[in-house]
Image (tube, rainbow, N blue to C red):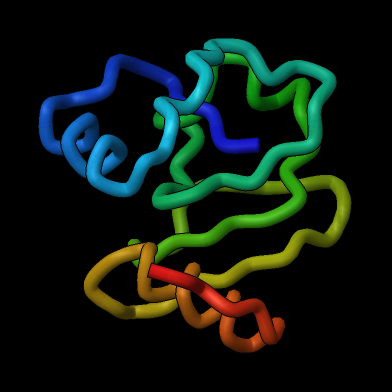
Length: 100
């Protein structure tokens, strides 16, 4: 389930409206949950209680940040222009069709 950590800017609001998608739920706490970090891997960008969550994976196009986990995690970190390129290819690799 996608979540957001802050307010949606006008550009994101427009894209969600055009796509017919709902604004993700606002969440500031992830303690006790299993999470994926999308478009970042620096803990300073994560919710304050990220140390109390299990990080299952990262999808990103930036350099690898300071994330450390107790258990192995899945990591998709590619040197491309945006994280959506990585996500699109993950869907293709897994055989999922993406409809416009």
